[in-house]
Length: 331
Ligand code: ASP
Image (cartoon, rainbow, N blue to C red; front, top):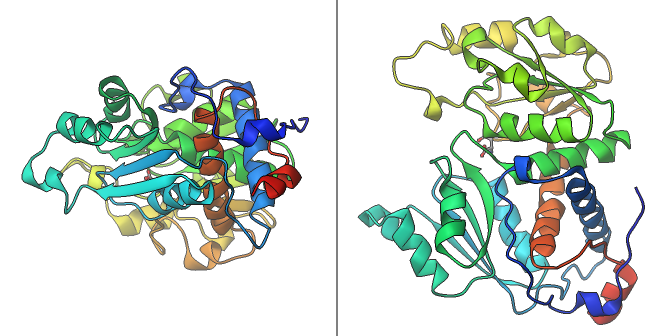
């Protein structure tokens, strides 16, 4: 993948372009993925400097609206916007007028009145980000809509994999656990298919969505199926999305006994990923989470530069790749 260089002029606040969004991995091409990962890599190099702030999005405004709890995603979007010198505002549903019954439409219209360049939104309803894109003039980034999509998570996971293995083509990733309720799994399976990686989904039968093979993945209910994978991607048991009274697994203890990721179940050198937040001792043994083969902290670091790349990419017209040297000069 070649490095793309930009001229100094491209580093000034970008000219306005057609309004683009990042709502789903289904909307991006392999070229988009490669461009975003290359941009993220350039930003990673810029963060090695003592002076980490870039002037790139000076004068732009990024609004983060989170209707669901979040640590990694909300903090990394906020820091990403700040590292690029954008003005940023973060709104959490609890403590806002949403608590008083304000609808998504009214909240979106209110925030839209400030003319933000980007609205980053997480919401429990499928399609919420698409809706905000319809009712505001901002570029919209989906930071998670129900169990549907979480595209920046998938991009940061690709970044992490490429960083670790130096390639994406032909990698074999086993995604283990509660796939049924997971937007992370849906986005990641699509993203891995885009880059010609192989995916095996593993978990209890009720937590593997029927027909998921149509997304170009294999399925297994036997945890031994992780053996052949380069990477074991562990999902959280998302109890907040489980229907009350539904018996997906007999008990969490039983889940841990049959599908929990322990050292005994991993091959030496097999890498482990988790989108967080982890339930240590449920889907992942704490010793696995803390071992050298766990890429979980790398994922968090990748989240910052990938989200910087997404914000930058949405607000610029063409393929980008940042020449760190010239950024330094401009700053
Ligand atoms: N943080 C991820 C998400 O928002 C994964 C999870 O919550 O389990 O979807």
